[in-house]
Image (cartoon, rainbow, N blue to C red):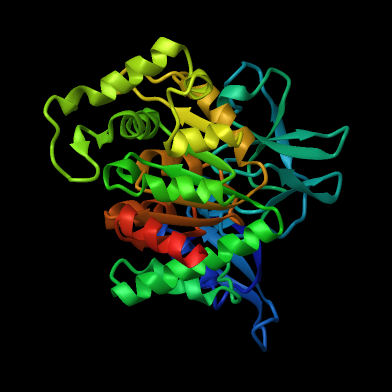
Length: 406
């Protein structure tokens, strides 16, 4: 290839056993570039890091820019060591050209010659720098203000690549879509151990719940986990709260009796009756105060002041009081509540799991449980590198989890 532009990057860390270096070479070649290895040092044992200095060759600046953008997301740093470049926001909610888009990996930017940690890192947002205070923090596109200094280009950005956790090998087999029942039970017991350790240091555990948690009958297990102090925040939508309250008031979910499994005559409107009953008293909190609601996930959460962030959608009936219908407001509430979360369990909820995954930094232990293998792998495919998956139904998972914690 007759290259006309080039750039030199460096990669440091466990870049070989974590497959970072082979991925870098694939990115360069797949995007139409080439490379020269200018220097390479390989760690001699498992705790020693490796280093490589690559000269990236590309036919034009557009291809080079694309390669550098992808390489930075796996930890490559430009070798020249300049400060991060910024451009000023000129229109509220509109980012400058060539803005840098974050991953959920730990990220630093160079300000006045010093590497500064980007605060509250999450994926697919901008980085705003306050030069006078030496600060850098994330801000979503719709929140940028006129005058904000937003990071652009590739200079002065350092991303810590995601590496295999040598101390938690028990989670490795959870990446497989096909596993025996025995392996699933082992995985669930390891999750239980992680939950115990998290709570022992007073860390927060987040549950992201879909309506199948009620439909398949294990809502009572989540309620018991709440009583035992293993749930510090809950994310979900209109469906989970509606069917939870339907089950508490009428013993059904989607009109199916949760004890017998039989369809109840006229039960198809029970979820509407549940919404109507809560709307009649004014709020979820009033339903607890008046004694209307005395059972279920919602009841246990409200009794313990556990935050419930319920983000609505266009398909919602009602909606139930407490459901947030403004998308940006729901994101703000979710961003507030993920602060301090150390572990997240996402059970039978694809859309809310993806939304939550977008907000979680890579160091949050994340477990995705669904009967559909595509849901289990989707978070990792979308950039939540830390997500470990388990393909099973919600009832089996929650029943075994509660038993493992007992």
